[in-house]
Amino acid sequence: MIYLDYNATTPILPEVVDAMVPFLREHFGNPSSAHALGRVARDAMERARGQVAALLRCDPDEVVFTSGGTESNNLAIRGVTEALPDRRQVVTSVMEHPAVVAPCSWLERHGWRVTRAGVDEDGRVRAQSVASSIGPDTALVTIMHSNNETGVLQPIAEIAAAARAAGAIVHTDAAQSVGKIPVHVRELGIHLLSLVGHKLYAPKGVGALYVRRGTPLLPFALGGGHERGLRPGTENVASIVGLGVACERARLDLDVESERVRGLRDLLWERLKGQIPGLAMNGHRVERLPNTLSVRFPDVSGIALLAATPSLAASTGSACHGGEAPQVIVAMGVPPRDALGTVRLTLGRGSTEEQVRRAAEVLSEAWRAVSRGRPMPDGVGGLEAGEPL
Ligand SMILES: Cc1ncc(COP(=O)(O)O)c(C=O)c1O
Image (cartoon, rainbow, N blue to C red; front, side, top):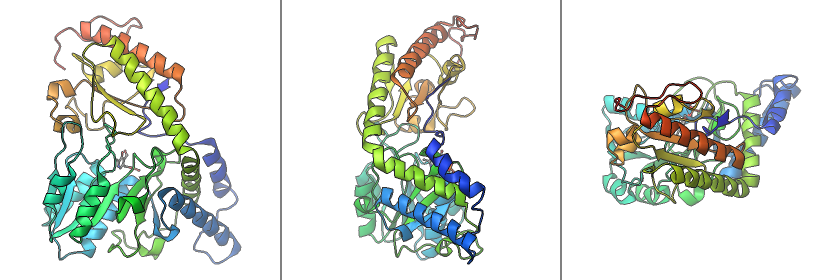
């Protein structure tokens, strides 16, 4: 199996597992306990907080541990809007993850005005158009740092400057960026940032929200005073320890690893392009994550193509359920029928040149068979020519 789905999730690094195991076995204390076992857990959690903060270049007390991206986004969006009830508008974009879309829709149902900025043909929101939507009534601007489908990077620093000028709070969902490229919160000028453990070689079910000191924010889950009163509940110590180690590893070799992966990603594109006439790339060619290649195969659906390549783990895009065209690609002006040919190929630490060459061969072979309606050599049926996508 060639794994090309690192934007969906990553394996856990062995050193992350090693760091976690003692906290699943002997160091089982509750970090809120005053005794020695509690202290061991608490100290480990605080070390992890420092490791996350070092990656983001913020202070440790600005890091709130959560159960992952969905919770971080909900805490940011619901927490700010509850803290600023005198303002009634949220500005977001049309390409957000459901973990931002859903809380924004919830706010809309509860009387908030939600403005959704469109994207251009490169998959970028235009900072100027976001800025023109922000006014004295804007409580929050929430726009993702990079898109999970296309990898396209968004002009967050420019957007943040416009939002701050209007006194609005700025959140960015950086689930896909943190660990892949440098993400430094002070340079971005934002107030809140979501990051996700399982996208950066830590376990699933753990993440963090960066909360700039002084940001108006209320907890949406109610309970004890954990995490500075923002996220009640006994902390997931082992996973938090794992998140810390994963962040440290990312900080130490981010530059080298991102360049290595970028080279492999570009090789994959060259190999595919050389064999598939009419293959198109989705999104901005430069302003995108180094590991992400979103392509449109002509005359086939991405679903049929991936069904014909069982030795490959890749994605047609999380928005592409039930045969519908991926919305993010359609929002870029791609006709829905063409957008259906989209396949997202995402690389990571385990990717090798040999895998990339093999993946390009397998995909090209499958594309030829599926687009001509021929049966695949391994017995997996191709589509009939002319079959609706
Ligand atoms: C951009 C983005 N935001 C949020 C999430 C949700 O993260 P989690 O699975 O930790 O809830 C994901 C994960 O797919 C994502 O890609």
